[in-house]
Image (cartoon, rainbow, N blue to C red; front, side, top):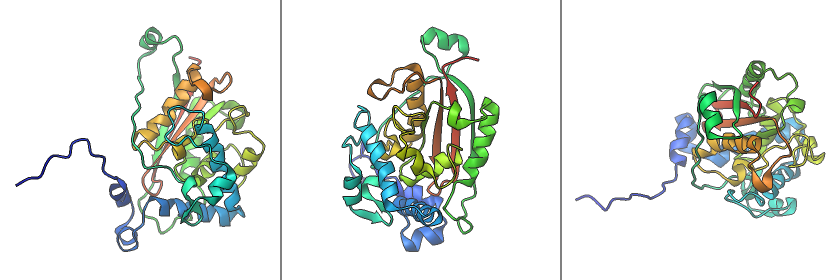
Length: 279
């Protein structure tokens, strides 16, 4: 006899996500998402002589941004001290440096140029979009950098006619469920030299009123809406370019970058360059 139906029950998808790891790593060791994030964080800290405090500063920047975002799932605005005081999950990542396990939804409407102008007074144009994938094998990885993302970034920039991303991009939303990803992604995107993303944070470059706001929504760190989290990065950039981002609106952005990351080990990346100019 069958049991009662379980419609509407949210099931943790981590076991499914873990199948992206080779069985020898996944089965006996119990590798999970936080463990994978810790691989990257540990390699980044050791490889570039960074500290746990550096990661906490990046996390606090996102938590404070999310406190102004009505759609964020974590809106506590944690300080650097509060991030560092949160429980250690898997060294060097602490609880407030790891995204929540939450649910949500997002939708974007793609249309022809003519139809887009009929539907909206402030349409957004996709100047370039592309993706890249990598092997599921992990033995060769250093976890220090996102090498494949560097290749993808150059390909997308070429299509979009971008020569200096630091100056030509006005806002960026990147996939940062484990806070070290934000540093590694932005470095792969060419926003700064490798190992120096924390310098942009210190200088205020990545803040809402900075020269290049990064994750003004608080990012995936504060809103991990499952599969929708990737599309949300694109939707957040579209809202910014439409001037409809509310309390987290960047001042007069014209070009935005959205990044999505996939696979438990970062096997997939997607980048989209969007603009509120049709040319």
